[in-house]
Image (cartoon, rainbow, N blue to C red; front, side, top):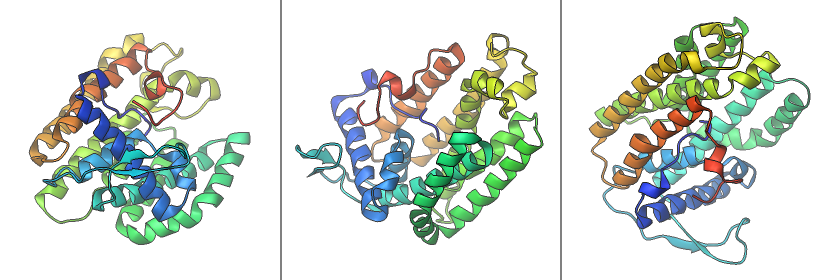
Length: 294
Protein backbone atom coordinates (compact mmCIF):
# COMPACT_ATOMS: atom_id res chain seq x y z
CA UNK A 1 0.00 0.00 0.00
CA UNK A 2 1.24 3.50 -0.89
CA UNK A 3 -0.60 6.10 1.19
CA UNK A 4 -3.71 6.61 -0.93
CA UNK A 5 -6.11 5.11 1.62
CA UNK A 6 -7.36 7.75 4.03
CA UNK A 7 -10.68 9.27 5.13
CA UNK A 8 -12.17 12.54 3.95
CA UNK A 9 -12.02 14.50 7.19
CA UNK A 10 -14.70 17.14 6.44
CA UNK A 11 -17.23 14.30 6.06
CA UNK A 12 -16.30 12.64 9.37
CA UNK A 13 -18.00 13.20 12.68
CA UNK A 14 -15.66 14.33 15.45
CA UNK A 15 -15.80 10.94 17.19
CA UNK A 16 -14.91 9.17 13.92
CA UNK A 17 -11.91 11.43 13.29
CA UNK A 18 -10.80 10.81 16.87
CA UNK A 19 -11.27 7.07 16.45
CA UNK A 20 -9.13 6.98 13.30
CA UNK A 21 -6.36 8.85 15.14
CA UNK A 22 -6.62 6.49 18.11
CA UNK A 23 -6.31 3.40 15.91
CA UNK A 24 -3.34 4.98 14.12
CA UNK A 25 -1.61 5.57 17.47
CA UNK A 26 -2.66 2.16 18.78
CA UNK A 27 -1.13 0.48 15.73
CA UNK A 28 2.11 2.36 16.28
CA UNK A 29 2.27 1.09 19.86
CA UNK A 30 1.40 -2.44 18.73
CA UNK A 31 4.22 -2.45 16.18
CA UNK A 32 6.67 -1.11 18.74
CA UNK A 33 5.63 -3.68 21.36
CA UNK A 34 5.97 -6.59 18.93
CA UNK A 35 8.87 -5.47 16.72
CA UNK A 36 10.65 -2.51 18.24
CA UNK A 37 10.99 1.05 16.97
CA UNK A 38 12.36 0.37 13.48
CA UNK A 39 9.07 -0.59 11.83
CA UNK A 40 7.15 2.26 13.48
CA UNK A 41 8.91 4.59 11.02
CA UNK A 42 6.90 2.92 8.25
CA UNK A 43 3.53 3.31 9.96
CA UNK A 44 0.86 4.29 7.44
CA UNK A 45 -2.78 5.28 7.13
CA UNK A 46 -3.16 2.32 4.78
CA UNK A 47 -2.41 -0.11 7.61
CA UNK A 48 -4.65 1.88 9.94
CA UNK A 49 -7.42 1.15 7.46
CA UNK A 50 -6.52 -2.55 7.52
CA UNK A 51 -6.70 -2.56 11.33
CA UNK A 52 -10.16 -0.98 11.17
CA UNK A 53 -11.41 -3.58 8.67
CA UNK A 54 -9.78 -6.46 10.56
CA UNK A 55 -11.70 -5.50 13.68
CA UNK A 56 -14.99 -4.39 12.12
CA UNK A 57 -16.70 -7.69 12.93
CA UNK A 58 -16.49 -6.96 16.67
CA UNK A 59 -19.54 -5.50 18.37
CA UNK A 60 -17.85 -3.41 21.07
CA UNK A 61 -15.18 -0.73 21.02
CA UNK A 62 -12.96 -0.64 24.09
CA UNK A 63 -12.39 2.84 25.54
CA UNK A 64 -9.06 4.39 24.51
CA UNK A 65 -6.07 4.34 26.83
CA UNK A 66 -3.63 7.23 27.37
CA UNK A 67 -0.01 6.71 26.35
CA UNK A 68 3.14 8.65 25.62
CA UNK A 69 5.32 7.92 22.61
CA UNK A 70 8.52 9.11 20.93
CA UNK A 71 6.58 11.65 18.88
CA UNK A 72 4.72 12.97 21.95
CA UNK A 73 6.98 12.30 24.95
CA UNK A 74 5.44 14.91 27.27
CA UNK A 75 1.68 14.67 26.85
CA UNK A 76 -0.23 11.41 26.98
CA UNK A 77 -2.45 10.89 23.95
CA UNK A 78 -5.52 8.65 23.56
CA UNK A 79 -4.90 5.49 21.58
CA UNK A 80 -6.84 2.34 20.84
CA UNK A 81 -6.23 -0.53 23.23
CA UNK A 82 -4.28 -3.47 21.88
CA UNK A 83 -6.48 -6.24 20.50
CA UNK A 84 -6.29 -9.05 17.94
CA UNK A 85 -6.99 -6.68 15.01
CA UNK A 86 -4.16 -4.31 15.95
CA UNK A 87 -1.75 -7.18 16.55
CA UNK A 88 -2.59 -8.71 13.16
CA UNK A 89 -2.22 -5.30 11.51
CA UNK A 90 1.19 -4.91 13.15
CA UNK A 91 2.33 -8.29 11.79
CA UNK A 92 0.99 -7.52 8.31
CA UNK A 93 2.57 -4.06 8.33
CA UNK A 94 5.99 -5.58 8.98
CA UNK A 95 5.61 -8.17 6.21
CA UNK A 96 4.43 -5.68 3.60
CA UNK A 97 7.07 -3.12 4.58
CA UNK A 98 9.90 -5.63 4.36
CA UNK A 99 8.77 -6.93 0.97
CA UNK A 100 8.39 -3.39 -0.35
CA UNK A 101 11.98 -2.70 0.74
CA UNK A 102 13.09 -5.93 -0.97
CA UNK A 103 11.32 -4.81 -4.13
CA UNK A 104 13.16 -1.48 -3.97
CA UNK A 105 16.43 -3.35 -3.53
CA UNK A 106 15.73 -5.23 -6.77
CA UNK A 107 14.53 -2.20 -8.74
CA UNK A 108 16.55 0.80 -7.60
CA UNK A 109 20.06 1.88 -8.45
CA UNK A 110 22.82 3.87 -6.76
CA UNK A 111 22.03 5.55 -3.44
CA UNK A 112 18.44 4.33 -3.32
CA UNK A 113 19.57 0.74 -3.73
CA UNK A 114 22.21 1.19 -1.02
CA UNK A 115 19.58 2.60 1.32
CA UNK A 116 17.24 -0.32 0.60
CA UNK A 117 20.08 -2.75 1.40
CA UNK A 118 20.65 -1.07 4.76
CA UNK A 119 16.93 -1.11 5.56
CA UNK A 120 16.69 -4.79 4.64
CA UNK A 121 19.48 -5.60 7.06
CA UNK A 122 17.94 -3.51 9.85
CA UNK A 123 14.48 -4.96 9.31
CA UNK A 124 15.34 -8.61 8.80
CA UNK A 125 14.98 -9.74 12.42
CA UNK A 126 11.53 -8.18 12.72
CA UNK A 127 10.53 -9.67 9.38
CA UNK A 128 11.57 -13.17 10.47
CA UNK A 129 9.44 -12.78 13.59
CA UNK A 130 6.42 -11.66 11.54
CA UNK A 131 6.98 -14.50 9.06
CA UNK A 132 6.90 -17.02 11.91
CA UNK A 133 3.55 -15.60 13.01
CA UNK A 134 2.03 -15.47 9.50
CA UNK A 135 3.88 -18.10 7.43
CA UNK A 136 1.12 -18.66 4.87
CA UNK A 137 0.66 -14.94 4.22
CA UNK A 138 4.40 -14.47 3.81
CA UNK A 139 4.67 -17.39 1.36
CA UNK A 140 1.93 -15.85 -0.80
CA UNK A 141 3.64 -12.46 -0.69
CA UNK A 142 7.01 -13.95 -1.67
CA UNK A 143 5.49 -15.72 -4.67
CA UNK A 144 3.51 -12.65 -5.76
CA UNK A 145 6.58 -10.42 -5.48
CA UNK A 146 8.65 -12.90 -7.52
CA UNK A 147 5.96 -12.93 -10.21
CA UNK A 148 5.85 -9.14 -10.27
CA UNK A 149 9.63 -8.87 -10.59
CA UNK A 150 9.53 -11.33 -13.51
CA UNK A 151 6.94 -9.17 -15.27
CA UNK A 152 9.04 -6.08 -14.63
CA UNK A 153 12.14 -7.71 -16.14
CA UNK A 154 10.10 -8.75 -19.17
CA UNK A 155 8.72 -5.20 -19.52
CA UNK A 156 5.20 -6.65 -19.54
CA UNK A 157 2.75 -4.18 -21.10
CA UNK A 158 -0.32 -5.77 -19.51
CA UNK A 159 -1.61 -3.61 -16.68
CA UNK A 160 -3.88 -6.44 -15.52
CA UNK A 161 -1.07 -8.98 -15.16
CA UNK A 162 1.17 -6.57 -13.26
CA UNK A 163 -1.69 -5.38 -11.06
CA UNK A 164 -2.72 -8.99 -10.37
CA UNK A 165 0.70 -9.86 -8.98
CA UNK A 166 0.63 -6.82 -6.71
CA UNK A 167 -2.99 -7.46 -5.70
CA UNK A 168 -2.13 -10.97 -4.56
CA UNK A 169 0.27 -9.45 -2.03
CA UNK A 170 -2.51 -7.46 -0.36
CA UNK A 171 -4.97 -10.34 -0.68
CA UNK A 172 -2.51 -12.42 1.33
CA UNK A 173 -2.92 -10.21 4.41
CA UNK A 174 -6.39 -11.60 5.17
CA UNK A 175 -6.38 -13.97 8.18
CA UNK A 176 -7.15 -17.62 7.36
CA UNK A 177 -10.52 -18.52 8.84
CA UNK A 178 -11.94 -20.78 6.12
CA UNK A 179 -15.35 -19.11 6.15
CA UNK A 180 -17.38 -16.81 3.91
CA UNK A 181 -15.97 -13.74 5.64
CA UNK A 182 -12.45 -14.70 4.60
CA UNK A 183 -13.55 -15.06 0.97
CA UNK A 184 -15.19 -11.62 1.03
CA UNK A 185 -12.15 -10.01 2.64
CA UNK A 186 -9.77 -11.63 0.17
CA UNK A 187 -11.84 -10.26 -2.71
CA UNK A 188 -11.91 -6.85 -1.07
CA UNK A 189 -8.18 -6.66 -0.44
CA UNK A 190 -7.34 -8.11 -3.83
CA UNK A 191 -9.08 -5.17 -5.49
CA UNK A 192 -7.60 -2.73 -2.99
CA UNK A 193 -4.15 -3.95 -4.04
CA UNK A 194 -5.06 -3.73 -7.71
CA UNK A 195 -6.40 -0.20 -7.29
CA UNK A 196 -3.36 0.96 -5.29
CA UNK A 197 -0.89 -0.50 -7.80
CA UNK A 198 -2.51 1.06 -10.86
CA UNK A 199 -3.08 4.40 -9.15
CA UNK A 200 0.55 4.47 -8.03
CA UNK A 201 1.65 3.67 -11.59
CA UNK A 202 -0.48 6.54 -12.92
CA UNK A 203 1.00 8.93 -10.38
CA UNK A 204 4.59 7.86 -11.17
CA UNK A 205 4.37 8.16 -14.97
CA UNK A 206 6.57 11.25 -15.15
CA UNK A 207 9.22 9.99 -12.73
CA UNK A 208 9.33 6.51 -14.27
CA UNK A 209 9.69 7.89 -17.79
CA UNK A 210 12.54 10.15 -16.69
CA UNK A 211 14.34 7.31 -14.91
CA UNK A 212 13.43 4.61 -17.44
CA UNK A 213 11.71 2.55 -14.75
CA UNK A 214 9.09 -0.09 -15.41
CA UNK A 215 5.57 1.32 -15.56
CA UNK A 216 2.71 -0.72 -17.04
CA UNK A 217 0.64 2.41 -17.78
CA UNK A 218 3.44 3.84 -19.92
CA UNK A 219 3.91 0.55 -21.77
CA UNK A 220 0.21 -0.24 -22.20
CA UNK A 221 -0.61 3.11 -23.79
CA UNK A 222 2.81 3.60 -25.42
CA UNK A 223 3.20 7.02 -23.90
CA UNK A 224 5.79 9.34 -25.38
CA UNK A 225 5.20 12.16 -22.89
CA UNK A 226 4.12 12.08 -19.22
CA UNK A 227 0.80 13.75 -20.07
CA UNK A 228 -1.99 11.27 -19.26
CA UNK A 229 -4.87 13.52 -20.32
CA UNK A 230 -5.78 11.41 -23.34
CA UNK A 231 -5.81 8.15 -21.40
CA UNK A 232 -7.54 9.53 -18.31
CA UNK A 233 -10.95 8.06 -19.15
CA UNK A 234 -9.87 4.44 -19.74
CA UNK A 235 -7.65 4.60 -16.65
CA UNK A 236 -10.52 5.93 -14.60
CA UNK A 237 -12.80 3.13 -15.82
CA UNK A 238 -10.41 0.37 -14.84
CA UNK A 239 -9.82 1.96 -11.43
CA UNK A 240 -13.55 2.38 -10.88
CA UNK A 241 -14.12 -1.32 -11.57
CA UNK A 242 -11.92 -2.21 -8.62
CA UNK A 243 -13.54 0.47 -6.46
CA UNK A 244 -16.97 -0.98 -7.26
CA UNK A 245 -15.83 -4.47 -6.23
CA UNK A 246 -14.34 -3.07 -3.00
CA UNK A 247 -17.63 -1.35 -2.15
CA UNK A 248 -19.68 -4.47 -2.88
CA UNK A 249 -17.36 -6.63 -0.78
CA UNK A 250 -17.63 -4.24 2.14
CA UNK A 251 -21.42 -4.27 1.95
CA UNK A 252 -21.29 -8.06 2.34
CA UNK A 253 -19.21 -7.87 5.51
CA UNK A 254 -22.02 -6.67 7.78
CA UNK A 255 -19.52 -4.48 9.65
CA UNK A 256 -20.44 -3.64 13.23
CA UNK A 257 -17.52 -1.63 14.59
CA UNK A 258 -16.28 1.53 12.80
CA UNK A 259 -18.63 0.89 9.86
CA UNK A 260 -19.24 4.59 9.11
CA UNK A 261 -15.54 5.40 9.33
CA UNK A 262 -14.60 2.58 6.96
CA UNK A 263 -17.43 3.56 4.62
CA UNK A 264 -16.05 7.13 4.50
CA UNK A 265 -12.66 5.81 3.42
CA UNK A 266 -13.99 3.42 0.78
CA UNK A 267 -16.89 5.40 -0.67
CA UNK A 268 -15.37 8.90 -0.39
CA UNK A 269 -11.63 8.82 0.29
CA UNK A 270 -10.55 6.31 -2.35
CA UNK A 271 -12.63 7.85 -5.19
CA UNK A 272 -11.27 11.27 -4.19
CA UNK A 273 -7.68 10.00 -4.36
CA UNK A 274 -8.45 8.51 -7.80
CA UNK A 275 -9.71 11.84 -9.16
CA UNK A 276 -6.83 13.78 -7.65
CA UNK A 277 -4.12 11.49 -9.08
CA UNK A 278 -5.67 11.53 -12.55
CA UNK A 279 -6.11 15.32 -12.38
CA UNK A 280 -2.56 15.83 -11.14
CA UNK A 281 -3.72 17.46 -7.89
CA UNK A 282 -2.96 14.66 -5.44
CA UNK A 283 -0.77 15.59 -2.48
CA UNK A 284 0.93 12.96 -0.34
CA UNK A 285 -0.65 12.70 3.10
CA UNK A 286 -3.40 15.10 2.06
CA UNK A 287 -0.97 18.01 1.87
CA UNK A 288 0.43 17.58 5.38
CA UNK A 289 4.20 17.32 5.70
CA UNK A 290 4.08 14.28 7.96
CA UNK A 291 1.91 11.41 9.07
CA UNK A 292 0.14 11.40 12.37
CA UNK A 293 -2.55 14.04 12.01
CA UNK A 294 -5.66 14.21 9.89
